[in-house]
Image (cartoon, rainbow, N blue to C red; front, side, top):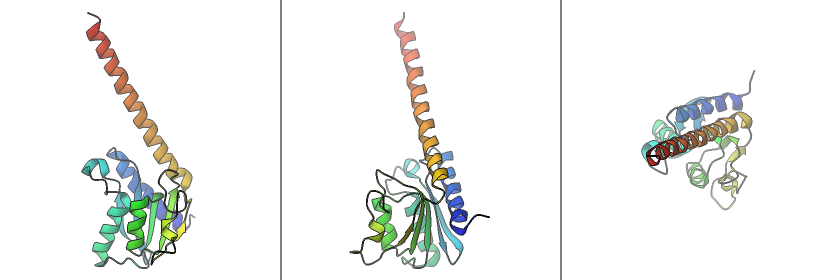
Length: 170
């Protein structure tokens, strides 16, 4: 039987797959309070054309609405990719106690990889961080998405070349 962190990460992976199904970068998040999922989110940046509609931000908004407060003390956030600077700031400001993430993000990860905003002692709140939960599966979902995206772009480019050659061959 899988442990608690793996169970909730599976739910975050389900959210990531919802994002993938609508051609969004597949990142998913769930927020748990008192062993109950109180919020879910997945990336919607392309759909909304809004740079702040990351999985974590959407989940935090839903959780705040559910509990009726901006303070999410005692809550845990499970996310498939290490939070970026924006999401890390929102996590700290909302007073989430623990962040569990799957895949590390070497380009923007702010939970220990690039920097660690979640445990920065100069802030008035720090989060417990657990990394690498189902990291291989979380990373694979992202890798496959970007591989498929590159293949679609290459295919489109090749089709455009064929059409262009057909027009220019007369």
